[in-house]
Image (cartoon, rainbow, N blue to C red; front, top):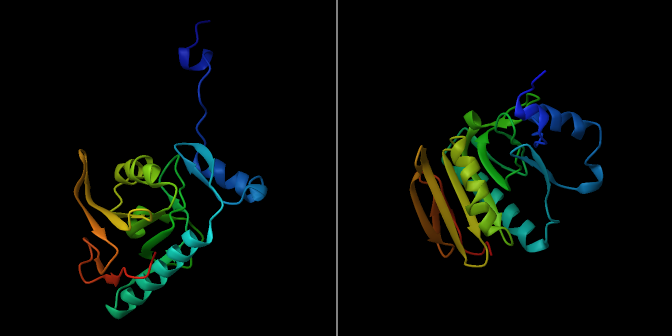
Length: 190
């Protein structure tokens, strides 16, 4: 009997979100801290230093206040799992999304903005993570580059990449490209 090469040759087994969830609920990852599922592979994230944690929390609070000030139905959340079917379950540092009380992961349909704070991961966040969010149609993506003190903003996802992008120094106002009424003060985040 001739079997297709994909069944007879060694190959990578990509976990699905539901596989990852079962493992997580069984406590498999308890000893590892923060883990993500990226392209079907379980990735253990570095422990968070105080600076990273501080920036992430300040950013979340500032975004939440600004959303309330403009009367938005969106909220800012920290460390939320984002289901990008069927093999990706990243945990961005901050998301701006519609909240809910149901028992499911956030999905792209819930999102306005995804934010990664990049202290030691700027290349990854501008590379692999940017491509991941682009591929799934995330409306707006920010990378807070700690070392350079600027925010890389990407929006308008398309087949050739994000159609629009800009870099903004964290020295003044930081405005969303897709929600122009949403603006925060970037000073003092770093």
